[in-house]
Image (cartoon, rainbow, N blue to C red; front, side):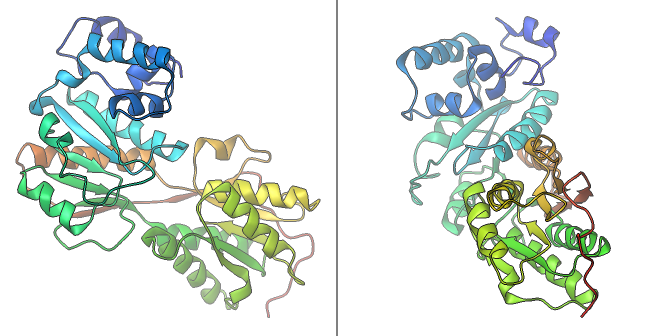
Length: 354
């Protein structure tokens, strides 16, 4: 990652060294060390998987810039279950942009792949850092939320995957309307056998996107066919396997709406393995609009979920709560929009309704 990719002006970077008034961000340390953000996170949280030389270089930068020396008045915490993909990078950019504007540092915590539900926030992570507030991408249990409240640490849930109590502040996106607009786009192109690769049924946003898909089909007078709806993990591997199943049906779909962009990339892989062209033989729509969506061939039509803006809004809200301000609204949903690129087109043979 370059300094330009970290989003920090060169002048700010040059003035930072030796200036404790300027908060140090995770992405700044990563860019300076020439490593990824997850690598810095592993060092900060004492996790394995980092070579001794790299760990020493990162620790030297942490000590030099006093990353862990910020007090509660100028540090907030960003919490992930596991930080591994581009989705998380977009969130970090939004959080750090707002934190930088408010001259607040960001501490990053990962639960890791084998999460102990009782360990956070019972361990000393938060009591040691004493953050002004928390933005949590990880979905905390009721007990964990109560523990944060008991410590007087305000928090905001980012993109909740489950229903939350009415008094828990959150920032999300209009997943239902996003799913509906993606499906409506395919219907307008003339597609009638439109499949959807959904995500885990227990994940709130996945259910909302599936409901939006169904709503668009029903409004167009098209049947919602069970064989055209598959649920799988939100990964390329999940999308690949599900697409193979769909495309090997006796009457395969002419279009597939994937629950996220990673699944959509898996659909591309499956289509090419079967000798199908996109969009000549199969139209594909994703969800999220990650950077990869514009880089695949052909560029992916997808629902833009404003992850960076969502993270910025969550940070503004969390910092306001940390300052003791009243919460003007508990929940905030930012609008999704359809980004049309080159992966969708009318079907090769137009099917008639019914």
